Length: 345
Image (tube, rainbow, N blue to C red):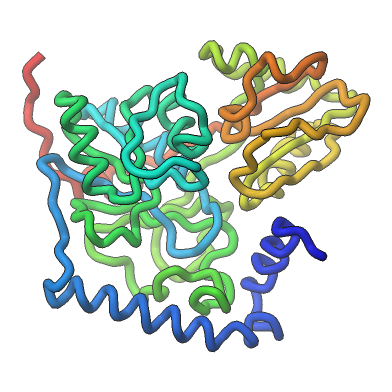
């Protein structure tokens, strides 16, 4: 019997073309389209209510299923907002967590309770983070605990219609809209728009635009590496540490939706890697690395689930992403946000 991971990757591959599997799933896709259209219609008619929080809201999301680069985009946006004088906080569903309800994230909270991405946003972004299925309730809870927050970033909230937003960032990767069909026959959560939606900016986490929508290209690469124990202490990534791994076998481990991107970036830096892809949001309950492994390199999304004391004699390195927003994107986004009012110190 095929593993859930292999089935997921098979489905991801099927979404790139209109082949036999995608065609077989079309009846389920039509049902999904009908249900999502009904839900959106209920909001349009006012039978389901959209709630506005007392601070501006910026939503980051993607139209397709699977990771398209939302987390590095959100981290870059937090940096931009702080440079502009805002005091941001983050709300997220907390995909993959075993908990329910509202959970405030701190450095000691296990990723299993928060989801790996919210914990990473808190550790790397240095901002308050709250997770909850209801992003409106999470936003209220975060504001009650952190009155200094004057803007909320909603991670992966494009389809969360209950939360009103002032602006949204739509992220695409190399897959674009895939085969153009809706789930589960294709990757689209929402219909592909013919033009950029109102109050939206498109960002391509890719080498070139992957849809007809006008947008901006993110600049991405590897900032360097840092030992796992140093990463947990907040050490900055070092380019020389990454270069020092050249010439010796390294096990590259990635629990991502699109691990090939990570592996390609490592090879571009001259590393001789053995690929070890894992399911997206892998929990790392067991470190099942091959016997005799000396060096392992992981992403930051993986690192939040591996405490240094668990690594034993294996040298674990964390490769940090250098993800930059182009100036034109920053200007377009800031123009959508309300003017920031001076805050008392």
